[in-house]
Amino acid sequence: MILQAQQIRKEFIRESRGTNCFQAVQETNLTLSGGTLTILMGRSGSGKSTLLNMLAGLLEPTSGKILLDGTDLYGLPDKELSRLRNQKIGVIPQGQTALHSLNVLENILLPCTLYGETVENSAVMELLERLEIAGLQTAMPSELSGGELRRMAIARALIRKPDILLADEPTSDLDDVNTAVVFNILKQFASEGKSVFVVTHENDAGKYADRLFHMDGGILRTGDESGNC
Ligand SMILES: Nc1ncnc2c1ncn2[C@@H]1O[C@H](COP(=O)(O)OP(=O)(O)OP(=O)(O)O)[C@@H](O)[C@H]1O
Ligand SMILES: [Mg+2]
Image (tube, rainbow, N blue to C red):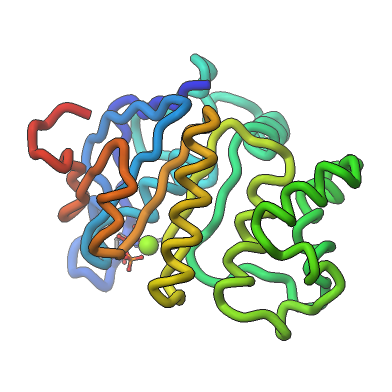
């Protein structure tokens, strides 16, 4: 499955900046294909989350298109876009997104519950074991460490077996050991054919990347500055 950004741009209207129009992401082309771990680094405010959210079908670009295997995501009616996005694209948003009134398993199954779907128990167990949180199913999020919460968020993004996984700062609150665990898991999913796109501040994340990009003032550059995306 191929996710393609074609000449996308995002402008925000912000009076506090003194000018009405602010370009968070300048015209960008990017193709994400299966079997690849793509890493995006860059300073705070450079436009990384804005780009990821546009790729995820969560934020409509000001101009340009996002194509999922040729289908123009934002050309779809809202309901269809939500369904396709939930089926094909797993998102790990920036920050903590656990619902604190639900236990770990309920949090992970939420995308299925919303669509009235059931998942084979064995498939759930396999995913939880892989992420080493199988023993925490009935725990509440408040009882989990930062690393466990992150792995719960990864499980939730993967529960519907998406072909594409987009992760925004998935290791922001983790120590070095847990950071390596999370990156190795993401790398493994990519090696199994998924397209994995990770936004991160981790300085040494480049070592996990098949493709490395930097964002600077809304401009996407390749790691080697060749300009080839
Ligand atoms: N909804 C919005 N309205 C107005 N401006 C916004 C909005 N969302 C983001 N911005 C601005 O766009 C710029 C890029 O934001 P973005 O969240 O993409 O940065 P980022 O690179 O992800 O930063 P960080 O590393 O801190 O998460 C910032 O200057 C931000 O203030
Ligand atoms: Mg961000």
